[in-house]
Length: 125
Image (cartoon, rainbow, N blue to C red; front, side, top):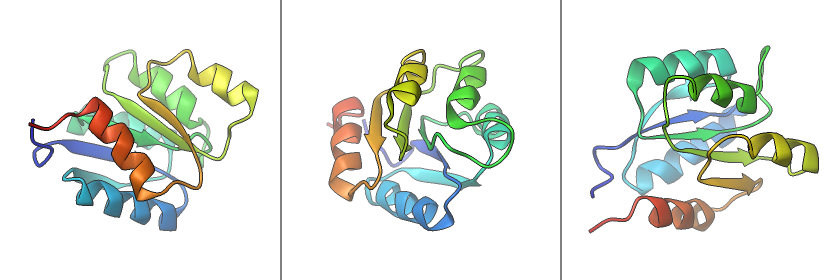
């Protein structure tokens, strides 16, 4: 399976981190869709673009966080999600466990961290 035709949505309210993750994912072969900072916008974007992967921060601007956004997305999509967050406290980890996710990475992350998760869940031939 080639990643060159796979779309990913990045939801991160820190623009610099958003650009960094976009760079990482493009290096891995994904096509990225937009720079999203709100959970509500992420929900609409998933409906519109039907991505193959979501990279989701938990703490977001706006009314709902990344976990709540994913709970809404799960009502219509089983798209894989990787949480990348600074929130590794038990409360957030427990809330995220209610969502079928690929991995829960704690910031800061390096390219290799993301690459390992991608290779494990999107094997290439």
